[in-house]
Length: 217
Image (cartoon, rainbow, N blue to C red):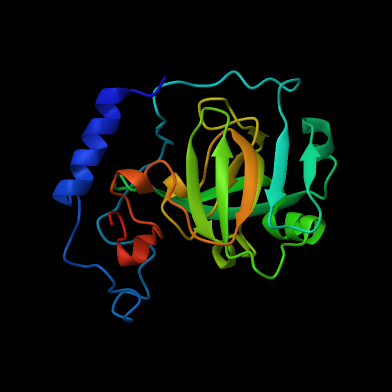
């Protein structure tokens, strides 16, 4: 079950605007275009583990990824079928809303654009909702999902993704705060109207651009 105290603390952060700086939007305005680190962030060398307090036991046998909603071709993939899709390797940074960033993470998985070719979103689809095995949800715009560095990953730094970090399969959406990169991916739902996910219902920003410091709504 989710850690109630942790959730309450993060809801309080949202109400109080904790961690916000006075540099919001400066990169978009061109002031910090040379700087790789978004406002309010600090670099770490490790990869901190953050979740809702419980890790689901998603074995290869239990894993299934449903992709549905406003699409022409709904699919439901076993782990083997997912791994049989064209593989994709990419390197990207992580920016967590709790103020840490980690550079140059090496991922392997399936590119979001490979899935888009497979399922063919309907013209009215505008947003994507990620659903996790632990009940977590988060929303992104379809145009944010349809980016060359977005992927459903199963490896990090050349090794299978651990359960603690969202294995066997998680999202990676590098241009947004990392709460948008859902762990333990279970379903990808294409939707017509925007709908808030777990943290978005609790005071966090619907978009989550780290360069605009969109931590909270």
